[in-house]
Length: 128
Image 1 (tube, rainbow, N blue to C red):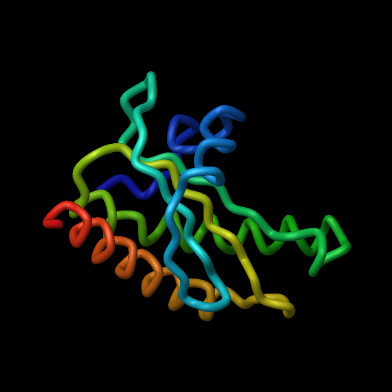
Image 2: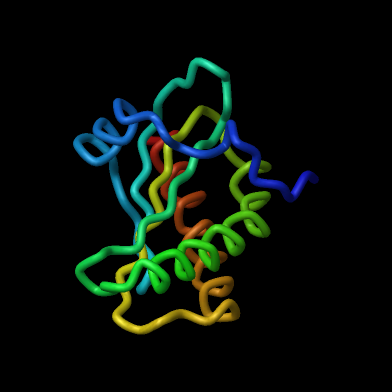
């Protein structure tokens, strides 16, 4: 398994992002929230993800960037949970909703739980 987070796995298209927040569904594992949408990408990537830390809770750009680095690292190391068990193409947005700065251990634990919930939710949608 490749544990990298390649450029083609990052969600950057304004069109996809707007559609994701307009039509997407979500799962939560506080302080993380995952918004997802089944979609199609031109480069045939199965998953594209973005990480968001709100300016409302963290005024300093340094703090927001630190949170995003920690969450991207937790996603990068745990994305195999999703890649191995999913069919289709999904756009993902991972939001940090907490008020205090997360440490890596907590972010990693919460990310594992969030991705498991996402797998369960997607598998339930397929069977319905």
